[in-house]
Amino acid sequence: MKKIIVLLVAMLVLAACQNNGEEDAGAIEQPENLDEALVDFQDGDPTDEESYLGAWLTYQSDEESYEILRIEEEDGEYHFNYNEVGSEGRLLQDIIGVLDEFEDGYGLFEYDSDRFGSSGQFELFLEEDGIHLVQAINLENRDETAEHELFFDKKLER
Image (cartoon, rainbow, N blue to C red; front, side):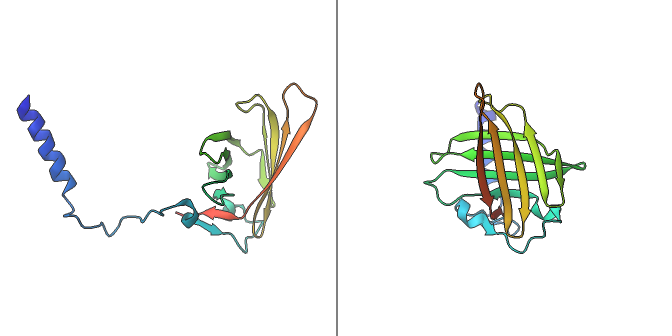
């Protein structure tokens, strides 16, 4: 048993030292913070939905809450993911699904229930400098709707 442990440790050490301490030339440089990975979106064409695919953030700093909007195309369907992240890093809202409509600079996503029992819809308006998002929330056990508007002008670059 001791020989097996020694052999495993030796293999791990050899695997770790395989690049002689040099950085891999093909390695992707990771940004040190989220702010470095975000780029301002400009000169977009609202009729070209493909250019709006990817991750969008309202991130300003580590001390503030922010929202993440992700739109991806898979097999002809546009998948929607909206997250709200609190200033302490806790996920406050997470809504995912397939866009009911996404063409001519407009997108619509309706959801039946989030994890808090609310339902509602998201409307996306593609603009030259980003995405205008309007969330209408039907509050559970109340006869009222709350509306929340955001503008995403920073896109996550990898």
